[in-house]
Length: 177
Length: 384
Image 1 (cartoon, rainbow over the protein chains, first blue to last red):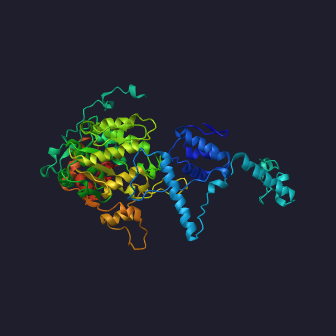
Image 2: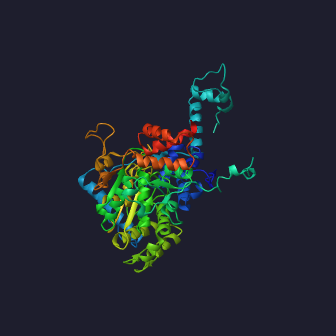
Image 3: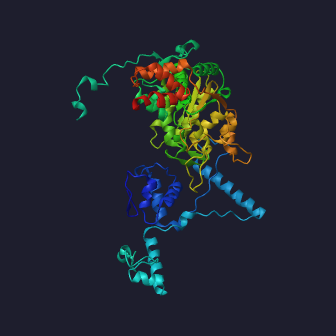
């Protein structure tokens, strides 16, 4: 399957296939799967179309993705309404509970709890490459040691140059990404 | 050399008749006189073992043995008597968890109970590996109506298996009240097997959980057939799950549909008018150890000195109320051990000259523990 130009092999577990994106490692992939309600042993071919579109729309711009609502979890004594209750009514009940919560907090004068969504800060693919390019360009612009070393294709972090440094000579460039 | 080239008679093990001739495991054979009887499980096409599956270690043993069999023990007769009493009473009075040392025969006893009940006409729901409900191997989706995470694929599989195993009894039972679903209404008077077929036909599996709950509700109200719910690896339902919610918080087991359903029957929040709930704990998997809350409820000894400051989850403790422990004896009696030894001996697993001394030495070395007696005692003679 192809998502945003990256091929995710169908037979791979979704949680590990997501690491094929530049900028997504195992931890972010795990969080992404949790966000999409994808279980650990789900293969890419078993992802539902809804999950695939949600994944694609999230990764196209993580920062502008909608905030996830905090749905209530049943207490031991909770009795659910009948199965034929329309979805709009259930959403309306949930919206009413949420509004009441906000109203209670406002009345008490306590600040609303701000939950940090770490997934909104991630950058993937072209955005991440652009950020790295900009960082290297910035180092060069201010005339720093790090910038000079990138320009000279030499190691940046104080490694030996008398021997080794082959990777640096090959990869350290101004237009690295 | 290819397998098909091995034509000598010595290689034709599949076609050779088994020398293991045993009595059948039937309800009539479970008596005090028959303690120590080796009995073979006759597995028809719709047997719970074939359809629901087996715990991992038991599956391996049954693959090695030429026939799936077990020994009738004293505790088997005790459990049989308990189940006979439970047949006419609510499952509120019979919520039992089989406990005991590792390898003492809890899973085998649970299987014997399942087979006994099936042969006696009970409706049986057997879950051989409860860890599969909580280890994030089945799809899950939040349901705003029930406010918990539904597991539609597992519900679908459970309905399919229950239908296959209990078809004649489910054909005889009917829905007492109409069930109104989103897309259709199932009228009262529909047989329970027809109700299950409605769920199985639904490709999206969206209605599976509702239909499973309705099925269990109908089974809990009817009094024609007693119902047995048997869960192996029971302690996994009381541990933290591997599932995460969209905010990456761990989902508690009682917020997942299948574990919650089982825990409600275990804790007496739901009960069958006639039937029983049997669980068996398992300490093979360190990911799902015996939790504190269950130890408290079943009054099992702690591994280390406990203090009031040790964390206990109130939510989980709610679902342990009313559970009773049935302690499976750690040791096999000599008669039981002899029978077990003879099963393996007749199946040609023994590679010794003198079986009598081997039997006594292995029995003493393993201390009578069934698993150690078979795996570290009898089967290790092959290596020696």
